[in-house]
Image (cartoon, rainbow, N blue to C red; front, side, top):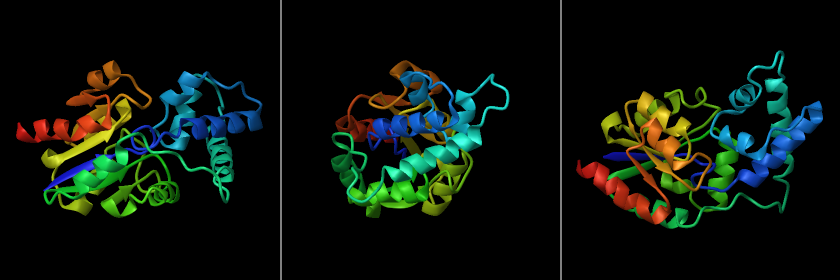
Length: 221
């Protein structure tokens, strides 16, 4: 049996507008100048406190925890009744369905989102039932710590050599490698191809249609 673990933000769903909007409100609540958009997007994938801590590197008494709390409040406010839900990237639903239909593959999630947030998104897009294990910032340390991948492998009963993490950031690839698993990078998210390759991704793909062929090549080696 093989386990494929997906990141969520930047890999399955395009959440950048909501994330930047919530970060803008969090910084505004503290009267702190907002970093540039590329800087904000570069920390997506980390858990909230770790992301704000990285954004505040070099600044004394930077209020990372308070910023994280304001971010959560802002994000939850954007999820009111009738509010839009983060859209899937093109091809995501078809690829998940294709993999889920295979008898030799099970699927998981490892994300910096909360359990509540990721289940809402996956449920909205009718993908939730395809995943046998979902690990989040509620369950384990932030990426690139391997805790989420190790826990997902235990849930699935699959060892590291048969586990692949699919993600858009170097944190995903580093998390996979720290757990003894392999990583596949995607270029439609928040980190560029060169960074993903430099982090040790076995393959880097430019569209979802290329994922299953890439997995097949890795599994054949």
